[in-house]
Image (cartoon, rainbow, N blue to C red; front, side):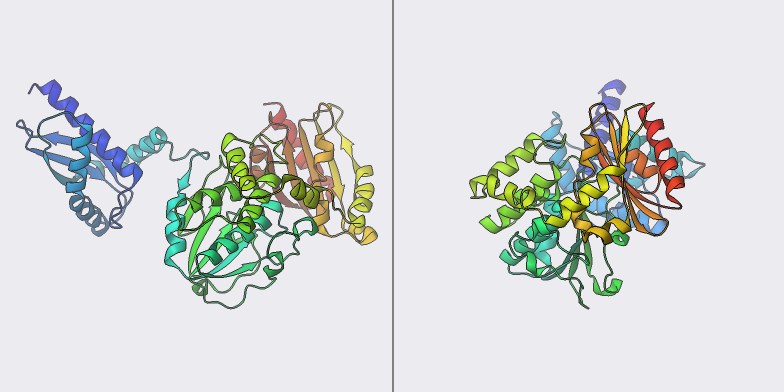
Length: 442
């Protein structure tokens, strides 16, 4: 074989093994491995596969042993992909040439960029991995972020019901009240305000990337395995096992995908919670995250017996009097920037005291400034404590408000995000306005 063809075959083998590693080999000994090159013997009987991996010499040897153990599987995979008569025997070797200087870090950086490792929009983990973790444990704590919205409440209930169908034990927990318009969901009364002492085999955190954003938890050694399911763009995966998909409309849609890998029949109660999760996080199927996948999942729930009208009536048309009193109190705070491109409202602690409203009753208020013609970004300032404000952002789609929130230590989606800032209101407001203006002018 000519040297050119030998070189090309070496490159093909390197590409195919790299692709297998990207999909994941199940041997736990294999760490973050990058294939750096392949040398072939002239008769194609042997291939020396060079790799690099960060860590100690002991960790490198574990990775090498794991790769060598998988050599037979890899050869079979190569046989299906490469059109050659003989697949060479594989011998894995650590690439010592990369130990000098910063070459290994440079190579890893190139691989991360090429394969999209740093792309915040890529899927990390999988529904199948989470399904496996659910099957392997028996007792669970299920929670989400404080001040829960429809997606948080409905997905916690969906997961709790799913685990019940699997014969598991589950405690559903949030320290805050279930919003009144979601109290009708099946088994909503089972959500408790204290997590109990445990110990649990696993703790499932939904719609949230940081344990600091959930309520008080038992000691770490009583939480068991952490399972994270999230769809926020700016987050990193949380947990020992995780499923992060920024392209998903809601946690409910993701739970529907997990169902495909479990021996569970979808019933009406589970379908109701999943549908509510999708409905609420897509803004009644109006937001840009209303994807074909979201609509297919919602249609599956309707086919199971969920009534869209009954759900819409419960969520949007059964409002307590205090909510409307609060809305009438908040709207006079409306400020529209002279440019007309952004607008804001302010919710103070005094307004809650005056109207008797609770925090869950202001859900959706931010949509009023967003509906103003010409407004691209809506902002809601909520006074949590003296000189502490929770800020929410909504975008019509042209401005990435997740980037604004991330600048202040928050996060979220491109069209819906939030953060928390301390200081006097004028100071906080001016900082936020400046950041929003900078984003709009990009």
